[in-house]
Length: 231
Length: 334
Image (cartoon, rainbow over all chains, first blue to last red):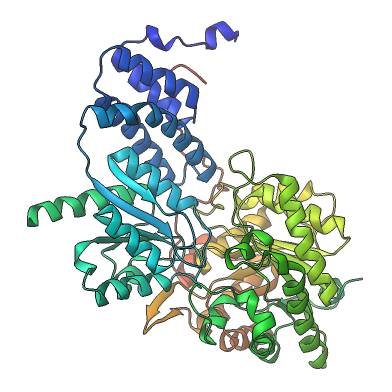
């Protein structure tokens, strides 16, 4: 096959075809092509929020499904997330300008003593992609850092991640501190990480354990909806 | 000849040790603390950890150095103490092994750096090799018999560790963690691992799987290795069930009896070095030794038998059944 035949001209595709091609390009981690696709849609007067949700978020949702089902693994998901990030980089300033709806705000970080962040980074990216504002505290976070950020950012959700059995219990320390300070009920607490499970999440007092980034997004949306229903 | 190779020449199976982290937790290690610091600050506890395995009947044990690379110790501001902390980990081990009155192999544990390697991540091959080499040098200096890289997910990292070990001329073993749909989180299958190892210039003494999800998945991985008829001995170091949180502690729900069954099954699957990982305590190791000594070797189980004995697998397939996963169609490109 010649290069010419392989070369797809994105601008020649109609909206529907272009969006489908963007799903593929996101899936394949093709950041340049995603940037091109996003710009084409914007030139065609798409609302930035629609580009985000209909092209990028939907494409990432497909990636999330295949990740969950053991078809894609971490390297592919990271590449896809990189492509998504590129697209979001173009959209972000425009989203703020156009007053796009925000689903909520999350503070996320890996707990004290733990440097693992692959899962956390994926969750942060997918949450951002889904329309949440995410404040990523990075790794090795003591309880003080989490609480300070929750307060300063007026966050809705606290996300904690751990990959070691020796650091998992620190999540309970954080939650217990929140209870002691009377602020536990002000936040939705989601936890995740390879050694965790639903029972652990419950035992330590989290609202939910999320086994992967896709589940985290759905869970966050569900809890935010519940929160709004209670107000 | 290194102590492990000698032992493998004399014995059909070798009992490895159990967990480090979860056992140190039981001794009072705080959430978020670096276990490696205890080598200097609480050597008696580390000696007790090693003695626990030795007295339970282990033929080998891993040193308390899993997080001993510069990238992991940096979290605790101890990146300048790599050589020291690893050396002490091995020294304590050497003393314990020598005091036992029998052959007990001291294996220097080398865990993952915690970083993703290039090109997907930021850690270069050269940096990874350098970090592993510094750690490995400390371990061998302290008196480890062999090096033992474990819980790895990425082939790039496994190869970097192998190169580091080659650089210092040390004998070694390596295991990976198959915790994602029967593969490592980077997508490597058990069959892929065998092919990868075949390409490594300085061959390990033995290779296999550790940690991961549960016993059933681990045994499926061992069966996967066996499909490739590897020449070298296979290692099986599975978790003692799954973690549960009880009264401020993490308890793994695998009973000693279950671990005894798992050990016998692992041997039937073809493993020659058998131990446990997270949650495996001396009481489990004792049962495992007893079961291995008192049960004759049997035929390899099939997947249905593994599932019946050890519980369901975490995924329908582990990538080695020959059934390709459904691939998404691409519209025009690729």
